Length: 470
Ligand SMILES: Cc1ncc(COP(=O)(O)O)c(C=O)c1O
Image 1: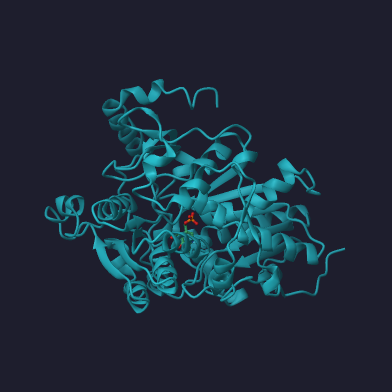
Image 2 (image 1 turned 60 degrees about the vertical axis):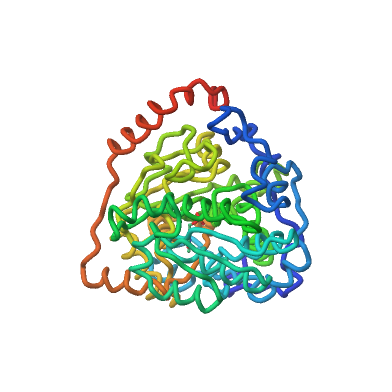
């Protein structure tokens, strides 16, 4: 019988996991490989060495299920981990639902989100390999501030290209990055060839994550002792995030609970994967889960990668510098509407997540920003914490589901990750209160045209054998 009096479960520092969980050996079919567009062949791990630390490349392709977390990384995790698991008791009471709602709160990290779980690991491995500077892109600023924080702790320099729309909407995130010693440029910038090509035509270009990734990559590969760091999408990044799900499992165990539903928002897929992979392991690998848990992913209707995107090979960035990745995509030339969930505006998603979606393991839902902020406000007025716009998409789903449970009388156990707080997103709340936010559905026609452009340029994509029969 679950313990019904608990508001939160806090583990002591020994509860920080000692290993990350790697889903690669446990996928239902092998992950289709990234493709080098020049050779049309799978990328060789050594091709990536100019871009990423060697250990991260090793992790990217590793078939080991459990990867030890270095003690130096756990030592830094101790600053804010283990994170609390809350029971959303007041939200439940407000909704009068028989569902039991739990959330893993990652907003307690110094940068305010789940992103340092991987930033710290990435900065550590780069430092060990003698790298002096990391470059990266950031949308909402959550990732950039996390890398600024992590590089500071390991004595590396950090250069961040921040999507201009977010840079203008969220000036305080840029100040946070500067406080931790990073240099930061609104993207497109005049610092890189690719950025200049756009900036000179339009100095107010709103930018996109795809463009900022191109700039950060160009900066890394044109400077010595510099590597690039990515905050989502890649296998090793998602794996570092599994500390969330591994801790949450232990915390729920202490309450004698197991989730019927695990839900999270998806920008590139790292926070959601970090939470649900360990439960996927229970359900489909060890088969020890007491329930057939459902995995639910949420996204904006303004960037509907999972619900409307096309499953194909596409570039990870706008300048087409990255390998081709097998994913649901809106097209790498996607320029998002400047909605407030900056972290959910990427045109693609993690290949592992896309494969699991394709194979029916994940249920996706899209919401517009008005309904998302309505849900966020209900959460703030019941639970107290102001949620970031990104996880508020999941809160919208959770509230709807809890209301369904009220109608059916089902006592479902719902777990989601509140992967960031919204204290740097107050302008978004103000715009919502003043009625300035608009719902927006990204048109399917634009997605189709973008993928047609890609395929007229690279007609051989459809001949690749890797996505056939999936
Ligand atoms: C708070 C928050 N949640 C979610 C995301 C989306 O990224 P991911 O899907 O990799 O977790 C971001 C990205 O910046 C974020 O800042």
